[in-house]
Image 1 (cartoon, rainbow, N blue to C red):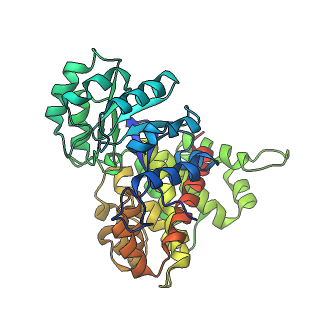
Image 2 (image 1 turned 90 degrees about the vertical axis):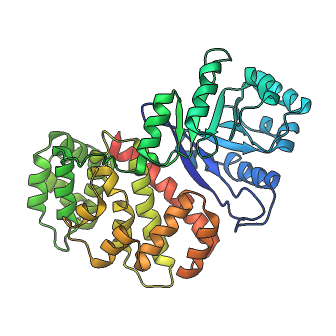
Image 3 (image 1 turned 120 degrees about the vertical axis):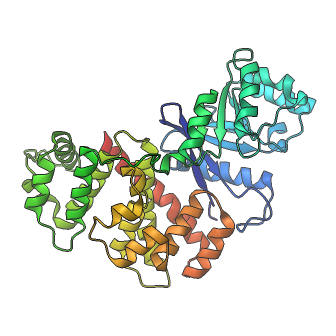
Length: 408
């Protein structure tokens, strides 16, 4: 059995990730196993909360989990630790007396409750004193309408937090932020801020120079060392984390050349890539760094199984650099011309064409739980959906490890 699971980040007003909504298939029309809401929720809980899966899927942060009506009436959440997830009451639930009793009991026992895809209605008013989070889908309830509701309830009822979901652009984030939302869900953080064309910062320039050197077929490590030496913070990070990777009590590595001898060229190339990416995201949401790493690993692993022959290292770079426009706040087509990447990688990043482009589109569809697109792209690439599900979870675990290693 496989857990068909994607996740979507939830960020606070400082753009720090506070949790992830876990997205199972949510209805009988999706391409994955033809099951109803109740069974889907039960599968997600069993697969991810009876084991360590949820920790891997959320990096130890809170999981937002959808609960249909019957699961709540049957008190299914009581089977699981209250600190591990937030109960999302689906918008399809009937605001009945029976549901209210369940909500009150769950709250009294310390569970955190959220109303999902909330549409203001008098029928839900009696639930509000027992709710911790209200989620507005800004595609359904305009931000202006949500603002009106928040102004009338923000300080009256139980200090409710308000979450704007399906926030996909920085303009939408700014509007929702100004309206008073506390939390934000969506992939707005992965979009570049280019209202006005920005010049590259010294940090971004250092990152770009490093990327350029380590993507060359024959790397000149003297040049790489000279670039790293211009940035004290970057030098410290690299040496510290190379030392963290060593298990012996030998004398610590104190120079880049020593690190090269210890790691070897290929491992060091990749490690410099991780640290450079972490360096570029210092003033960006941490989710951006995590997503970059996850895509890199996911892309590489999928390329090994695809029917079309793809070079794994090119797939890795395609995934990693798929967010380069957001890392550097520059149009992707401009940034790519500054890097010695193959035409296949460039086409994938700029136009999402070719086999690498198809894998990238598949990954982006999986991120957003667009299951029908995932199914179609899987067929095109000759991939089994069960393998994709397994590799997605593997990539989350892998990215979480390197996120910790390179940003501590």
